[in-house]
Length: 100
Image 1 (tube, helix red, strand yellow):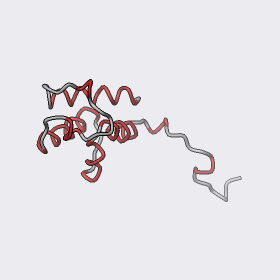
Image 2 (cartoon, one colour):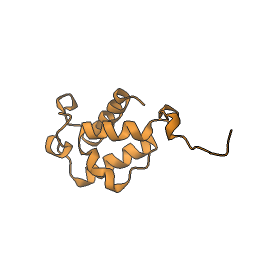
Image 3 (cartoon, rainbow, N blue to C red):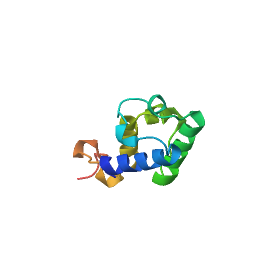
């Protein structure tokens, strides 16, 4: 999933949680709670919706990273990135000294 796709998903879900919000004015590095009229239950519903939509397990310890648009994009883009896109250099692959 690209950063733009992640951003679109996050904004769509935020729009469902806070339908009265003007998401076009959302600042990427400022907390959603500081910009939108959402409480802790709204935020929890947002996290649950992200988890269900993207099918990623979001540990509770990562929730603070989801408090801004910038944080969501960074965390979620990495979480849904297929493992085939993660490049491995030959040095990072297991090495068997007995193999010739």
